[in-house]
Length: 282
Image (cartoon, rainbow, N blue to C red; front, side, top):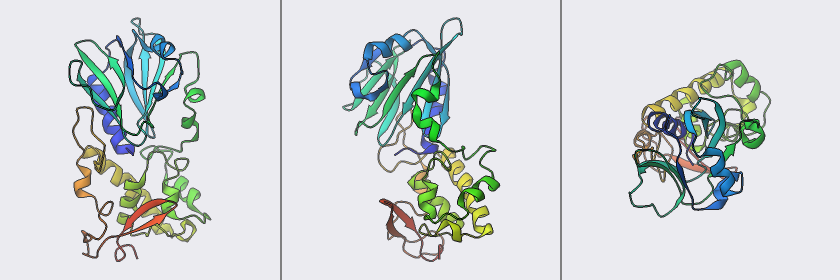
């Protein structure tokens, strides 16, 4: 599943390529991709003729602010890539990818395609008279952004204190911090020297401080490298991310640790795989 760095990479690409161009129309090839409204024609009535003023990111959600010719606010277009979703900026006459679910047609014979193999991705159109979070309800449950002032060391410490859950499981809880998934939780825990099955309440003040800074460092490093590609992620122009080549532990089971040479191990926590170095994360 694309995580914060991948979604941020896509957002930046969208802001470079899709702004201030009226959406001329398109095609919904898989109706259940629409989370709201459910009627295809109602979706097109909401977005057709409007341009995208800017793309924002909240957690793993992409949110496009729409506007009319008069620069009047016209609602929101929301996208969640889920497990295998891809947004691709292509020529309208290019070969249609097998798993294309939605096409948004722009001027200049360009289009934005949503390609999704496992069909879990979703689109929303939120009319201007409705509150965004009342329609895209998952936004209500998100904790602070890792790069925001709200994600302070004080906040993070308070969220971990007295919690009897594994620290890896807590890092995946979007209500604590938005956007972190399996890859970057493993990477941040490695940089902090903390085993993923450590009980959060047992962490020292020093460990929490190091983990807090490691989360920010790991996410920024991946954004700088265009995200991680282990399976499906591509940026807007179809290019793979580069962070996977330098991953410290994720996806490296039985390979030597880049620091000490000890083989990387993998365990299951809460149904999710966790990679770690048994020496560096003692």
